[in-house]
Length: 134
Image 1 (cartoon, one colour):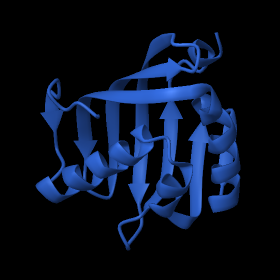
Image 2 (cartoon, helix red, strand yellow):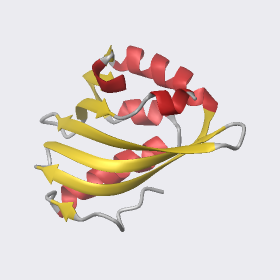
Image 3 (cartoon, helix red, strand yellow):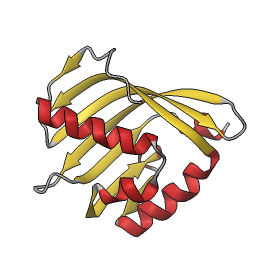
């Protein structure tokens, strides 16, 4: 479960933080369909420090279903949340557990945009993707 105990700075409202905590909870279930259901139809997910851009539900669903096959768990340890409830950045360390029982922890920063309906409209993920492929 996402851990907010180490958060130093949080600029989100209680409602914004609750929304974000729910997004992380869904990600941590590794349920791709549930995660995609939280997204706007025209979602734009930028991964691998800008090297990969996924647009729309189908592209995100396909890529995450394939990428998450190797995982049995993800845990987010949140450090900072800066911005408003609809545009913000979060800094975290994320621990990925693989099917072979090994795990790795990766520092990441993600810029998040929500649409007028409160759905995830975009995310730009910056981390060390090579750590996940080791």
